Length: 162
Image (cartoon, rainbow, N blue to C red; front, side):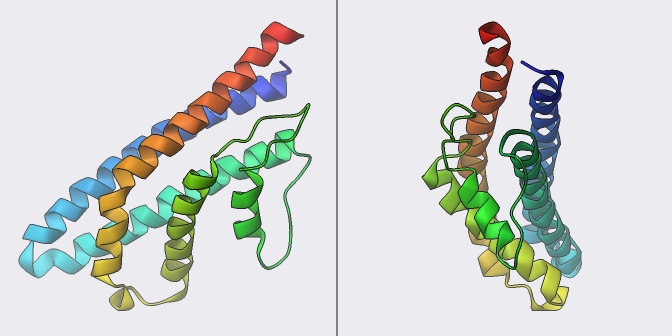
């Protein structure tokens, strides 16, 4: 394992820790939004921002992997979608797939929501759509977290093969 691969494994683990905190905040603020009455908008905005941050953290992790393992990231208008797809690809003699196709498809919903948050006013957010994302987040995060940790373990296991 090179120093860069060791650093990448550590960065993945640090991002996972931050994502754990973000998913906890999403749940906590969603629960408060359901019971807060007059302050509901503030909690819904917090949930939206944290859902945005959740996908940003995942995308930052995928970009690091693409840069360090795949030789770079893609460009163009659809690079966000292509990066997610790239993580499902096994690159023989380089790396295994980082994410399963199922995880990628589930995460794409969060990518789309992040795009929406970036491009509309907060008052235009749909709480029903957010509820779907919040309700599914625990299982999607568990799967994604497991797959990212497996990839970090793969990187650390390279040390034993050099």
